[in-house]
Image (cartoon, helix red, strand yellow):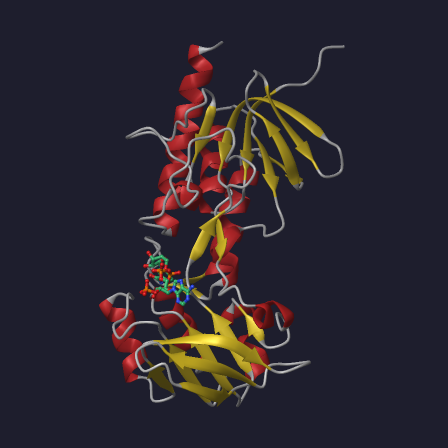
Length: 310
Ligand code: NAP
């Protein structure tokens, strides 16, 4: 019996992976989509998405991803839950191995594994993760009703989290390592206008205080070196993301931050038949709509590759 070889395997079910799935299913390529531990990707841990075109009154992130998925299912996409632990990309067909020992052979692979939240990297943060330390206001904000919360970061994510958290919290203090924000003007203004939000500039968190749960943070002013302890019950870390590329770094070309490199104007990586789409290969735009766009490109690139290697 000859072994089964997939035409297209897609890793990831965020906007990039699911758009690639919709396009390749509609091209009758019967894609297999492998979903990891966070099905739907980063949008499943956001609330209102106001900038995805086509939704005049905004849409909730999880709802949007559910709609992507249903659309892919409508065209017969196959979904498989799996934690891919090993890839062999130096031979065709390409091979993927999941944690439960399932081996998948495929002629093309679309990598759409996205990016994950970055952490400050101090031991107390790790110790109190889930005990007051979080990276997802949408998931955990509800638990902090009438409490004092600290958000660290100065980008759009930090402003979005801080603003969202004011729905529940008594106060939200944003701690940023510089004295100007990286966030877009509109998000900054929203946060500045919110009476519950205040800012602590030029400062870094040295330690998260508390034994069993967060009771405060120790903050150093990076200009004066002064240290102060702030009382709070929640710390939301919103300092950006890291690409989920650990599996591929030895085989595929990456930039110095670990994002997959694609050839100009396409989603082709340095290995024929392997394509990358979405945040895993994008440290610049990182939007749901750009991820969906490159997912579409990857499906078309894979389809053309298959035509050329029949
Ligand atoms: P980001 O733009 O990279 O901002 C990260 C922030 O965290 C920066 O202010 C950075 O400080 C700070 N930071 C990084 N490492 C740190 C560390 N170790 N300790 C303390 N602070 C640290 O990341 P992001 O806010 O997640 O946004 C990523 C992308 O998604 C952006 O393109 C953004 O526009 C987009 N986004 C859009 C929306 C929306 O439109 N609704 C919402 C969220 C995100 P410095 O400023 O000093 O570098």
